[in-house]
Length: 111
View (cartoon, one colour):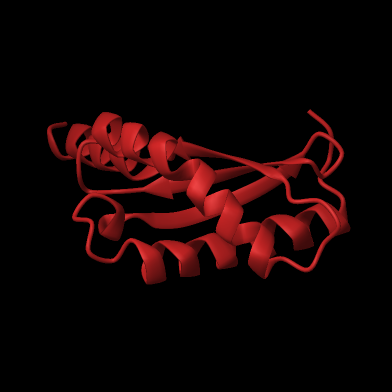
């Protein structure tokens, strides 16, 4: 995998912040989308794609389906708020780090 460029890091961070604001402002009444935390973002593909990693306490499959249905709306809002010539494509990916940490902790307790 290629190393992130400083510009890619800035764009990914900016997109993460703006998408978090969009989720807070536009989808706060949705019980599935209101429980999402964006934990990381990475830019790839010549700055034309951004992966947004999220965590939720709810079912990851139903959350992913809901995010897939609203991605177009979020990207439209992102284009309006982002001061760039091109708006990157966004993809939401579930971050299971907390689940794995909990599992490891449980295994260590049972030793």
